[in-house]
Image (cartoon, rainbow, N blue to C red; front, side, top):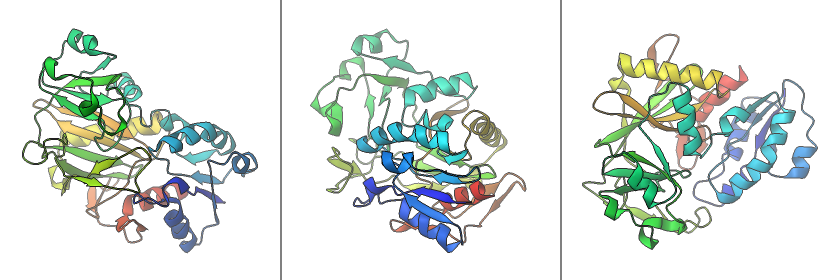
Length: 329
């Protein structure tokens, strides 16, 4: 078996860093037959002739060029490989919150009432109560998420448009939930990772909804982005597991295997007054496990088993190591 790894070269000279090289080194260290390729290069992809048991593995991100090239070449990858990450079914929903909302509604995944709006009249005609949260259909790290206290505050101008300077429309809108954190749950075939991200915008940086972290300049960041915020504070959430949350996670695992054809999906979940709600999901996002823990479905125990992490940036991306192990079984 040969494992083909996407080089991820768009990010090599940025702080975000390439995932391809550390994945390649990890697999070589494990004695695997691995080749690193540029899956964005048509000539390279066209000349691939994999065997049935060969595997393609790539991490594709939010950069404008990355998405454009990935959407063009990934169909050829899926046609050539019987086993690949990301899968065709899962990548269809990548970085598209509108598609994700429709998917969740169609698969009995609890989510907030959501409206697709093309202008302010659509906002006014929705039956949501203010305050509301407005999200562009694409974006990561809350970079295209806005909070509006009243309808009068919904103004499409330079200030609300943010770093892209694109119109705030079209977008999705939802009623604001007064919560102090959300859960990031990374569900694998054999278990999951869970932690909390604190929402501190009310007490800290009120211009950065919902995490409230300070802005920082990054000259090497993805093209067009002028500044980004520091990552939110993360808190271990394994001790908050209960039957209701576990049942939801088991349902999400079943859905991602049967409908998304993937061993990994990252789900963002909140707890409202009445129940847990899923906000969105991602299939190729960061698989960072900051607390070195893993809930195992088979034993129903919390394990500390990440002994061979993939080194990436200045931290250990243990989660991607787990994903590689599951795909190689």
